[in-house]
Length: 600
Image (cartoon, rainbow, N blue to C red; front, top):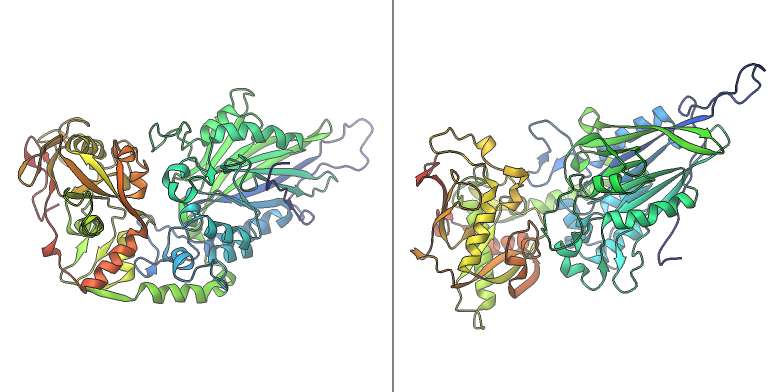
């Protein structure tokens, strides 16, 4: 038996009245054929919770809200779950998750770094407490589970009353599962024939790139299709009547890391298409809402039902299964999926009471004042204009790398820096600056590296980044709502580089947009060497930017960039945009600026 392979048997109460439907099993008229035995149950699913327990935004220190008036958090999900259990009968439901649980909010950061769960007498992680109280049956590993290192993940795993599944998270030495590959759950039916539901967990191969520092030499992550093809037949041979996959992998069949790995990042649709024997897939990772998506399996010709609930607990997926007893076994007759919106319910008061103290501790933490700013800064226009708030990130990174290289072999090379607009709502106010302000500017746990690139490589890098803009002819109206995110490129995969001067001609096709590229007032020398201050996600190949992943690393540290920014503000006491802000890049069309400075 493979290392750490465990079977988890869900214990379910007898079916509630009216929740499971079975055919009559008593005496029937002699002329009438006995009706088939039937049973219905529901698998509920969440994904990409990212540390959200409450409907609260710790970066703004107020109730979460967006343009669609979505709500977030497990406290809301708990209310939805209890309503479904009341309707279906608790014994006729399962609750699973598709990963990315312990990173994303200041609540999850606090209990990983400030008051860590790994301490000798450390606390229980709020996400573990909430998910245990709600009664999750299983959860797949997400790639962000590895952000804080394997010890934090293992402690979280220990604190959960349900298994963390990862059939394609293997021990690097033995190539055996490092986490349970699956869980098996037994549902009691009124027919006297239990239904066995297997949940197979699959995580993202990109972990090998994105969290290389934490997993290299310890774990490997083969492709989802390969491991599903290995495990699904085993689960069927073990008596699984229903196989549900919980996959932290989008459905599009695309990858953000190019050809650095032979495995597809967003492979859930490929798993459904290529691996027979799967009934439904709970999809994660892509942060999109897919109520129901059907994929036909090539071998069986049967539909596999996929569903991805919206991130952060904004939606709850319901897979409704109808089974029929035929030829001595349960057969899935029908599967349908839908999502419930968490903004339709109130937070569960039991979850609020359970974690109220933890919430208040984090609110106090994020409101600590770390300095002052002489002017207000915002990311509202940062996706299409060189804004001081992004210059702040780049200035901190460049200064940090320059100081680290001082007196060494690479001290004479110019230091450039890349940064992205991670949130269009981040702001630094005029006056007091708090931890939440800095944290909102840099919400990810990225660390900083220094890589050596040539001028020619930097040109390629900038051309790749400029794909972010929709081609817009000279003279045509410019709608900022349609200008960015061309080809589905997210904001975090558009980089601005500090230290160079350049224009992006959006009238030209992608690949030939960078014009007037210069360094210190002179055209950029293709052979010149530069040090690029770059986050570890990008340096590891995230976003598939050219050259950087293969470039020579000359320095790296393990401190989050967010904390580096916080310490920079603390050390100076005052943030003055006038001392670092500049317009190093702009959008143009045929040499004419798209936006005038100070105007959108």
